[in-house]
Image 1 (cartoon, rainbow, N blue to C red):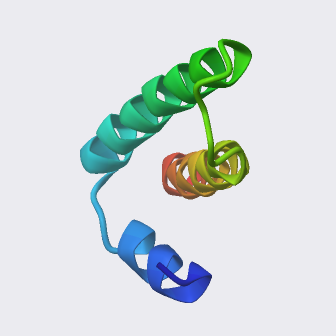
Image 2: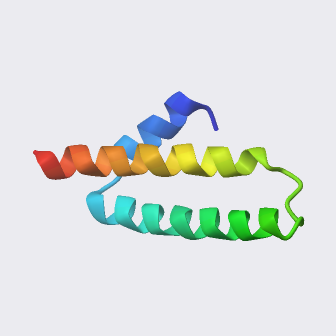
Length: 67
Protein backbone atom coordinates (compact mmCIF):
# COMPACT_ATOMS: atom_id res chain seq x y z
CA UNK A 1 0.00 0.00 0.00
CA UNK A 2 1.34 3.41 -0.90
CA UNK A 3 2.03 5.90 1.84
CA UNK A 4 -0.65 8.36 0.73
CA UNK A 5 -3.27 5.63 0.54
CA UNK A 6 -2.24 4.44 3.99
CA UNK A 7 -2.54 7.94 5.42
CA UNK A 8 -6.01 8.40 3.91
CA UNK A 9 -7.02 5.08 5.43
CA UNK A 10 -5.64 6.01 8.85
CA UNK A 11 -7.22 9.47 8.84
CA UNK A 12 -10.61 8.01 8.01
CA UNK A 13 -10.74 5.78 11.08
CA UNK A 14 -12.20 6.41 14.51
CA UNK A 15 -9.96 6.64 17.60
CA UNK A 16 -11.10 3.24 18.89
CA UNK A 17 -10.15 1.65 15.57
CA UNK A 18 -6.77 3.39 15.65
CA UNK A 19 -6.07 2.05 19.14
CA UNK A 20 -6.92 -1.46 18.01
CA UNK A 21 -4.71 -1.09 14.94
CA UNK A 22 -1.81 0.26 17.04
CA UNK A 23 -2.08 -2.69 19.39
CA UNK A 24 -2.06 -5.22 16.55
CA UNK A 25 0.89 -3.48 14.89
CA UNK A 26 2.81 -3.58 18.16
CA UNK A 27 2.18 -7.30 18.47
CA UNK A 28 3.20 -7.86 14.85
CA UNK A 29 6.41 -5.90 15.42
CA UNK A 30 7.23 -8.00 18.47
CA UNK A 31 6.69 -11.22 16.50
CA UNK A 32 8.87 -9.95 13.67
CA UNK A 33 11.68 -9.13 16.09
CA UNK A 34 11.51 -12.60 17.63
CA UNK A 35 11.59 -14.21 14.21
CA UNK A 36 14.59 -12.07 13.22
CA UNK A 37 16.54 -12.97 16.34
CA UNK A 38 15.89 -16.68 15.77
CA UNK A 39 16.94 -16.40 12.12
CA UNK A 40 13.54 -17.29 10.66
CA UNK A 41 12.75 -13.88 9.16
CA UNK A 42 13.54 -13.64 5.46
CA UNK A 43 12.00 -10.21 4.86
CA UNK A 44 13.85 -7.99 7.32
CA UNK A 45 12.48 -4.83 5.67
CA UNK A 46 9.09 -5.77 7.13
CA UNK A 47 10.28 -4.60 10.58
CA UNK A 48 10.90 -1.08 9.28
CA UNK A 49 7.53 -1.00 7.55
CA UNK A 50 5.73 -2.07 10.71
CA UNK A 51 7.56 0.53 12.80
CA UNK A 52 6.69 3.33 10.38
CA UNK A 53 3.06 2.32 10.14
CA UNK A 54 2.80 2.13 13.94
CA UNK A 55 4.33 5.60 14.24
CA UNK A 56 1.85 6.98 11.70
CA UNK A 57 -1.10 5.48 13.55
CA UNK A 58 0.10 6.79 16.90
CA UNK A 59 0.74 10.25 15.45
CA UNK A 60 -2.77 10.44 14.05
CA UNK A 61 -4.21 9.19 17.34
CA UNK A 62 -2.31 11.88 19.23
CA UNK A 63 -3.60 14.56 16.81
CA UNK A 64 -7.16 13.46 17.47
CA UNK A 65 -6.70 13.38 21.24
CA UNK A 66 -5.05 16.83 21.28
CA UNK A 67 -8.17 18.47 19.83
